[in-house]
Image 1 (cartoon, rainbow, N blue to C red):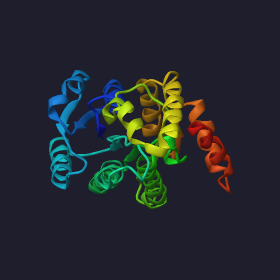
Image 2 (cartoon, helix red, strand yellow):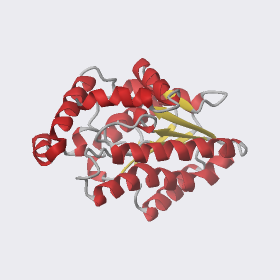
Image 3 (cartoon, rainbow, N blue to C red):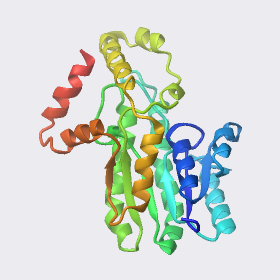
Image 4 (tube, helix red, strand yellow):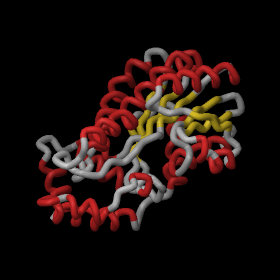
Length: 272
């Protein structure tokens, strides 16, 4: 991989940071990008080339991609990882929060991919996007987050056959619960959220109790990064990757659920 250049978004913590470290170890020329340069220390510690990139800023995306290609002469892969979590139900969530979820989790992925495609065509490269089991299974109090992740999966599944005609492979990665800073970075005051939930308070408390249990047995970011690295080199290209047995079972339930009753029966238990 010594001549291969990979750009990764959202590398300040968690999965993105772990992917950057794994890519460096694998021999890629690794460009680790993040929104806030003040949080670049851990990414620099991987040995990656750390650069600023805000996936919600068109100029930032264009400048970063242009700089990478100017400096390295090519781009072989993009790992779309940057994302935010949004907890709450639609009646109480501010529209600005819902729009922010779409801007970061969906439109950011689209715009980075759009900017990268000409260079990936030239290198016959790869687009690997970290989505979530929440891109295949709608989950309580995650309407805004899952909507964005469903949109990403629909976008990528539609792009995949078109990109393949010009030699670009497209894959999505579907982790379940992962022990990263992702949840903490949501900055949700749980007691305040329950107090403000009104008639939804019992359901929200039940969901939080269930979710805490899920995160007690979560995967590590390094385990997810291993799957991302597999997706980058798999031949033939594999579109959909789950990162654990739980994720495979969970996604399989949804993909085979023609009338929606399997998922509804499962997730309704999370809020009771």
